[in-house]
Length: 328
Image (cartoon, rainbow, N blue to C red; front, side, top):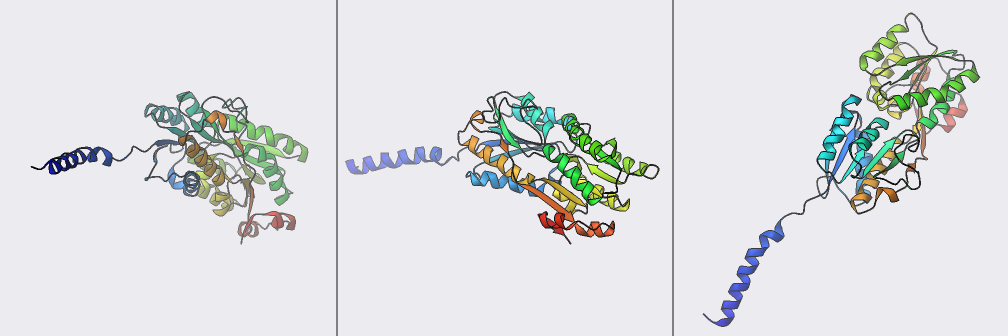
C-alpha cells in the first residue's frame, strides 16, 4: 500500500470513529411549569408564556422542554408538585397562577431560579426583599390585580348605583389574596353605604350553594374576587349571575367574554408573556437577583353590553368610552 493511501485510510477511520459523538443532539434545558388550575382553561395565557420564551430565542420542543404540573384547582397539591419539579432539577421554575404557586415553589427550593406571577405585592408576600433587587432565587411579575380591587368595586357601583347589598366571593384556600380583597373593598363599601355579604367559595359546589342561598336572601349585585379558580369556573359564574339577574364584576376578561357583565384587570396574558421572557433570560445566564419584579401597567376594562341589556342596565357613556372592549 502506498504511503498516501495509508494516511488517507487512517484519516477516514478517525472521522468514522468520532462522527457519532459529534452527531449526538445537545440536551435541551427544561422549564418546570407550576399552576393551580388546568390547561384547558388557560390556552390564551399559555400562548402568552410561549411568546415570551420565543422573544428570548426559545421554542418548546425545539431548544427547550417544559415539564407541566397542574393542580386541577386543588391548591393543597401545589407543595407536592413544586417539590417534584425541584427534585427533577429543572433549570428554572415558572410558578404561574397566583400566590400559592409562588409560595409553594419558594418552599420547595432555595437554589433553582423561579419566576412567579402574583396579584399582590411580592415584598409583602415575602417572596423577595426588594422589587428592584429581588435577591435570592426568585423574581417575577406583579399583575396588580389586588391593587385594582377597589376600582373594580367602584365600577360595579357605577353600573348598579341602587345596589345596597353586595355579595362577595373569595377563595379561602388563597388566604393572603382573600384578605387583600376584603381589605381593599371594605373602606369603599363603607364610604358608599353598602353592606357586604362574604362567601367562602373554593369549589364548584360552593358556587352552586352560594347562588342557591340567594333565593332566600337576594343581594343586589355580586363582586367576585381575583383568583384563578374563578377564571376556571367562568362559564358557571357567568351563567348563574345571568340566571339570577345579578350585575356582577369580575377580575378576568374571559369571564366577561363568557357572559359576565364586566371585568377590570391588568392584562394577565401579557403578564404570562413576561414570565416566559424572564424564564428565557435566566436560561441564557441571567440571575433572578438581577431581574427586578415587573409591575404591570396595562389595564383592561371589558363591558358585556349584551348582558347589560338583559339586566336592564344602561351602561354610562363615560364607561363605554373608556372601555377597552365592548361586547355587543
